[in-house]
Structures are given as C-alpha cells and as structure tokens.
View 1: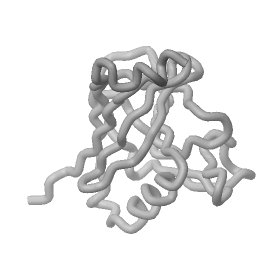
View 2: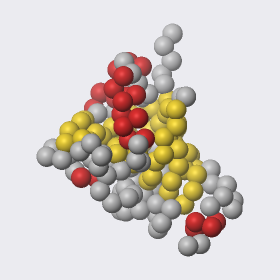
View 3: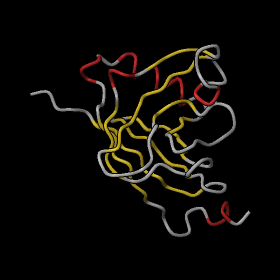
Length: 149
C-alpha cells in the first residue's frame, strides 16, 4: 500500500504586519517559510490539496516576480486548494521572491527555496506530497523581543 505523503506548515511566530513565519515540514526535512504581509494576510489554518500535477515552473519572462527565486532567476508554483469553505483562493507554495511576504501563499526563504525544489524534482511524481496541513503554534513569549521592535 502506498501512503499519500503529507506536508505540514506550522506558523510559529508573527512577523511585520500580517506576516507570519514558520516551518514547512516534509519528512524528514524542514524549510523556512513566510505567509501573509499583503492582501488578506496569512494562509488560513486547515487542510489543503497540493496540485501535484498542476505545478508550473518558469523564469522572469513567464512568471510573476513574487514567484521567482532571486538567486537563480527561476520560479515555480505549486497550487493549493482548501479542503474547507473559504472565500479566499489562489493559494500556493512558491519562492518568496520580490518583497518579503505573500498574499497568503506559502513562500520559501533563502537557501531553502533551492533545497525544497531540488527535493520536489528528485521525488517521483506519485511519491510527491498531495496534501498540506496548516496550523498555528505560537509559543507565548517566543518572539516578544522581535514583535516589540
């Protein structure tokens, strides 16, 4: 029996404005990510389907600058579909290019952009994660020094 792989995104701290920071976990690896800061803010908590067969890849000529890895000039977008009722749509996992933050997508940071995409491309299509669970677990006092600046 092949078990469907799942990723999880745990929002662990508040950033500037509506931005939230956290970890995208794809066993056994973890990646630094950001969500929100623009539009309607951070991605809502809940389960999402990952559009494994609808992933797109491109460069500055074919993709929005917010989806481009500033180091490589290449970009990609993995669409996310909420498995719950919400008026919001257009979620995805992508490099956090352009200015820091997203309109609710899960934006990978720095060197983790390449690490994540390399793993995605190395993983056979049928073995790629097809679901994402988004939760919030902010430890009280964890980043109060950062939040007060």
